[in-house]
Length: 314
Length: 318
Ligand SMILES: Nc1ncnc2c1ncn2[C@@H]1O[C@H](COP(=O)(O)OP(=O)(O)O)[C@@H](O)[C@H]1O
Ligand SMILES: [Mg+2]
Image 1 (cartoon, rainbow over the protein chains, first blue to last red):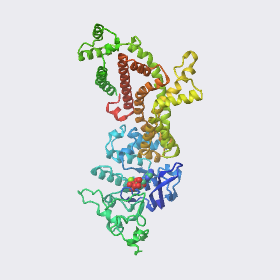
Image 2: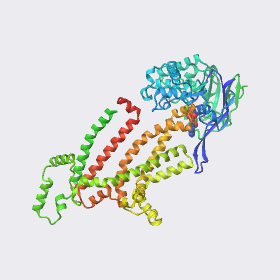
Image 3: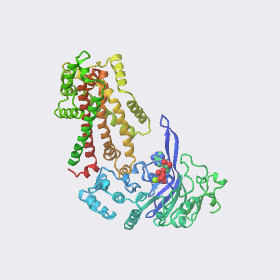
C-alpha cells in the first residue's frame, strides 16, 4: 500500500477579510492535486517558487487543513489530531529559521523524545549521540546554540531532529536551496545514505530539476497550484510532454554555468488572478486558442499530463 | 557577561561627557546675561559685575566648563534661585512622585500591552486583532495631555468617581494615594501601551512564522507549550528593549502628565523652573534626566544581553 495518497486536494488562503472575518479575496495555492507515493520511494515535486509546493508539504504534515479533498497516510485519512503524528517529519529550506535560536542543539534534537516521554535520560542521550553520528556531526556541538553553527551543520541538525522520531515519511522542503553548492551535495549524499540504512520515504520538494534527476523515483511538476505533469524520472527528464516541463529542463544549466534567474520566459502570473483555461498558456510557446479551455488530463503508461497538445494520445 | 557589562560601563564615559558639554553649551546659548536676569533690571552695574565674578561668568568658556564638570562630580548642581535650595536635594525631593508615576504607568503599559499584543497575534486578522490594533494605534497617536484632560472630564467631572488633581495623602489612607495616581498613570501609560502592544504583536507574528514553530508542532508539542517554550521566549526578547526605551519615554511624558494633573514631581519642577528662568535648576534637572536615561539604557542592554545567547556566549559564560 502507498504510504501517502493525496486525492483531489485543494487549499485556498483568505487574503483579505471583511470586518466580520468573511474572506473577500482568496488565493488558490493548491487546486485539485492528486498523487501517491509508494513506501520506500523518493517522490519529487518541482516547480517555480509560488507554485504551491510548500503548501502541499504543509498539508501532508498537517500544518494546514485541506480546503477540499483527502490525504491518506498508509491508507488512513489524515485527521485533525494526526498533526501530531511522529511518522511524518519535515526538514525545511531555511536553516536559520528551522532551529530555535534560544535552545541548545542537544535540546532541539532531544525534544521530540521528551515530548513523547520516550526513554530515560541515558537512553535519550544515547539516541541523540547516535543521531549525531548518523548525520556526521561531532558531540562537541551539543551544548552550542544555532548561531554557532554553519548552514550545512544546521541542516544536519534539522535532519537529526526529524529522524530521532523514527518517521516513515520525511518531507524535504527545498532542503538544500539555501546552502552553498558544495554543501548542497554533501547534504543530498547524506540524505541518500540515510535511506540506505532504514525504510524511509522522501517527499522531496525542489525547484532544481538537476537534483531530481539523480535522486528520485517519481516526479510531479507543479505550476500555479496544479500538477501539470507527473511520471517516473526517466519519463519526465528524458521525454517531457508538457511545455512547462520542457522549459524547466532547458533551463537546467551545464555544470559550471550559472543558473539563469528566469528559467521560463515571462513572469509567473499572480496566483490571485491566474489565467483561465490552461494556466500556463500566457507563457507557453505552443499556446493556441484551444488553451483557453481547461486542459484535459491525459493518462498514458503510468504517466500523466494536463495539456491540449497531448489530448490525442491515450 | 562581566566583560560585557564592564565594556558598556566604560562606553558611558564619553556619552556622559558629551551630555555635559551639550547641556553646558545650551545654557550658554540662552540669550541674555544670567546675572542681569537674576538680579533684576534695577541692579547697579557694579552689583552685576560682582555677581558675574561670583558665578564665575567672567572666566573663559573652557574654565567655566571645567568648574561645571568638577561641580557635577562633587554632586554640586548649584542652588535653585526660586526655591533657595540645593538643586540636587530639590530633585531628590520631587523624584519619588515622578518615579512612582512612571513605574505605575510602565507596569500598566506592560501588563496590558504584552498580553494584548500576544492575543492579537494569536487572533491574527480576526475581529479581536482588528479591535486591539485599532486601540493600540489610538494610544500611539493621541497626545498625552489630551488623554489626561479627557480622563479628567469623564471620570472626575462627569462621573465623579475619582478625585481630581493633585497628590493624595497617606493620612487619608492608601486608597486616597492610589486613587490620585490612577488617572495620571493611565494617561501616561496609554501611548507606551500602544507601542508595546504593536511591537509584541509583530514580534509574535514574526516568530510564529518560523519553521521551528512548525517543527515543534510536528514533534507533537501541544499548542500551549509551543507558545510557552518556543514562541514567547523568542518573541519577548526584543520586547524587553522596547519596554526599556519606554521608561525613558515615560520620564519625558511625566512632564506633561504632571502638569495636567498638578502633581509635584520632576516634570512640574521643570516646567516651573523654565517659566521662572531658574537656570541652574533647569540645567541640573536636564542633566539628571539625561543621566537617568543613560543608566536605564545600560540596564536594558545588560538585560537584553543576558537574555540573548549570542551575546552571552561571546563574552564567555560568567
Ligand atoms: N499561509 C498562507 N497564507 C496566504 N497565502 C499563502 C500562505 N502560504 C502560501 N501562500 C501562497 O500560496 C502560494 C503558493 O505558495 P507556496 O506553497 O509557498 O509555493 P512554493 O513552495 O512552491 O514556492 C503563494 O502564492 C503563496 O503566496
Ligand atoms: Mg516553498
